[in-house]
Length: 106
Image (cartoon, rainbow, N blue to C red):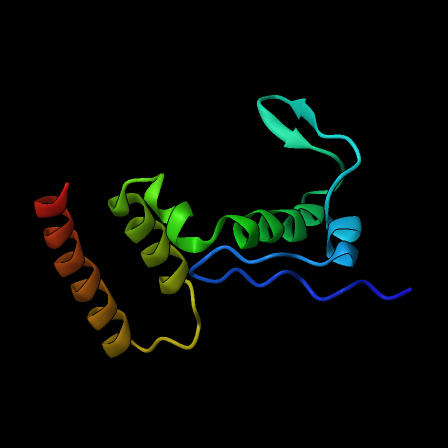
C-alpha cells in the first residue's frame, strides 16, 4: 500500500486523515539522548508535519520568539541554490528590517 500524502500545515489547525495518522505517528515514542526517537531521522518528517497541521502554524509560531523563526527562515532560505547574489542581499536586508520590527514588538 502506498503511503498517504504528507500532512500540509496551514495557518489554522486542520485535521489529518486516519491514513496519515497510521503512516506517520509512531506506535511508541522513546527519548534517546534528549531527543524523541523511533527509527530513522527521515521518519520524523511526516510526524512533525502532522503535529504542525493539527496545531496550525499560527499557534506554532506563537510559542517561539519571532526572532528565532526569522533566523531559521533566513538560514534555510540562504541555502537555496536558486538565489542569486541580488536576491540573497534582498533577503538579508528584509530579514534585518523584520528583526528591527520584532525588537519593537518583543
